[in-house]
Image 1 (cartoon, one colour):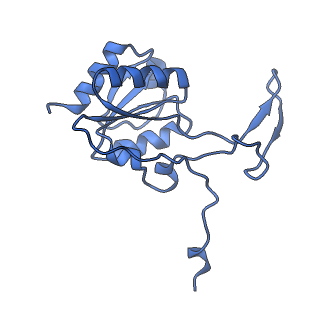
Image 2: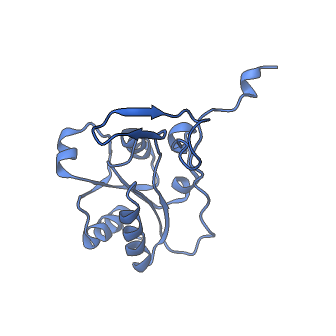
Length: 172
């Protein structure tokens, strides 16, 4: 028997959960590491009549730094304090994410950790549509792959976010 088939990956992934049953409304997945921005955008989308799921994206291993940026210690997965273990994006680690697969639109950002990989994976998909939030300077000086994504320049306003999601969805 091949032992490698029985071995589990050491990568701990975010548990994306599942969407509730379809309600007839478009599904929008919002990915953002800033919880305040995530909450605000979630409320905007819900108030506009969309079904919404959210994700803060992957987190890095716990690392404590002094104010002058000298690393004191980095914990391994097994040593990290509770709630501080690194978590990977299942789309990158496993090639799939249940929330992405059932979304009509993903609103993501270049601010996510591993954003290059996440945006590249999302841009290769035929579905869902992709909306990317980013500052002009990041767009001009980065190598993010965004394919046919609708881009919203940060800071994002309610009007621009709603217009971008509507444009990404197209005529329904």
